[in-house]
Every structure is written in structure tokens, then in C-alpha cells.
Length: 301
Image (cartoon, rainbow, N blue to C red):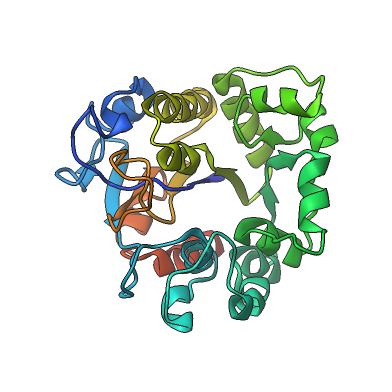
């Protein structure tokens, strides 16, 4: 059994408007194929096809203001209502008083303590390590969680050896780091992701281009970010066994679905589930805080 978890930053449910919502401007044959031709939106926040489901997930967690990555990701990866804990939404990094919670209660720690194997697939250039280790550096929630559970972040060496994935999926962005690593097609990256996850209980990939495109209010970049992910999904689907394996897409807050604003939104986020675990997750997840308990319960069951 393979459990593939994809965290894509800043993806909410928006209007069915190709002028403002890139989901309805992009070519997304793999997502549409999973969902009987449909795409998730505010109007169609629940979709149940023969093989996959979408359910809306509350990202505001009962706290006023716009959801942010630090608190939203803490909620996802610990099960703790982080914005309520500190009285506000906060990001992009975890608030100082949330750091012990992230380190001690995160998903990877819970899986480690249950004897489960896990892998964080993202690989980073040296500049990333220099930043998080600098006096002013801040470690994001996912990386902090993985390190706290005893994991080691992948470098470009692991990416070159086929043991990691570039944060932009294809590796094209590594050209600015003078990297000689050959860029790959999104489909190739998806196939690699599945192969890396197959021997483990859980594998995670974190994708930030969706949130960046939303902040940039760039339709072309937003379409590219979504189409890359669609190709990545297509690579996974070439190899996956829906009778045994599960794909889970989650996000921390809305953004890319409404390019009329540079800021985040209060829209629900779509949880997309394909494969063996979809009924389990659709029956248990309503809020960001439900995700880690559900994943832990599913893998421990």
C-alpha cells in the first residue's frame, strides 16, 4: 500500500470563472478524468466520482481574519487549532509559541512513534539550508516537522540521484542556482514520487507555486502551476493501484482560486482523495485540524 500526500499551498474553492479562477482557464485532463469531467468550485464543493472525491475543508477554524500559512500548516500537520491557540492567523512561518507544538505533535512524530515509515520528497539547494540556519532564518512547518521526527532534508545530490523532487516539480527553477541537473517532465516527477513512496507508509510532497502565483495575481503563472501539478498527477496515475493506494491532496488556505486579490481568501479548501482511503477521509475530515488525526488513524488501522 502506498499513501501519497500532496500539500499544495494556497488552493481554495473559487468561482467557476475562467477570468479570475485559473482552475477554469487551465488544461487539467488528469484532475477532470478523476472527477468525471468536473472541477471543484464553490458551487461544486462536493464531488464524488467512481474513483475519487472532493470535500470542502474549513480553513478559518473559527478565527476572524485571513488564514495564513504558519497557523494553517500547523493545524494540518499537528491537529491543533493553531490560530485559536494564539488568537490570530499568522504566517508564513509558525508563531514562536507554536514551535514546540509543531516539533512535538506533528504527523511525522506520530507516525515514527507508531513504527511507521515516512519520507519528505522535496530536495533543496544549498541556499535554502544557509537561510534556515542563519540568525534570521525561519524554518517552515513541514520541514520543521520532518526534522523534529529525525528526518534529513534532501539536497540537490538526492535529487540528482533520483531520491528527491524539486519544489517546482520539473527542476527548471534550479537553473538560477547554476545546477546541472536535467529538468524533467511533470509526468516523470509524478512517476518518481510514486516509486519513492511505494516502499514506505507515507510520502509527502510540498508545492508552493500555487500560492506564489496567487500572490502575483498572474493568470499565466497560475495556469502553469496548476498544469504542472496535473501532469505530476498524471505520472502518479500511470503506476498507482486504486485498490491498494491512496492519494490525498490538502491545502492550508485559499489564494490561487481568486486572482482579483493578492491576499489569501477565507474560502474552504478542497480535499481531494483518490483510491483506497477515500471513504475513510471523506467521513472524517471537515476542518484542517482533522487531517493529521485521520492520516494517523488510517495508517495505524
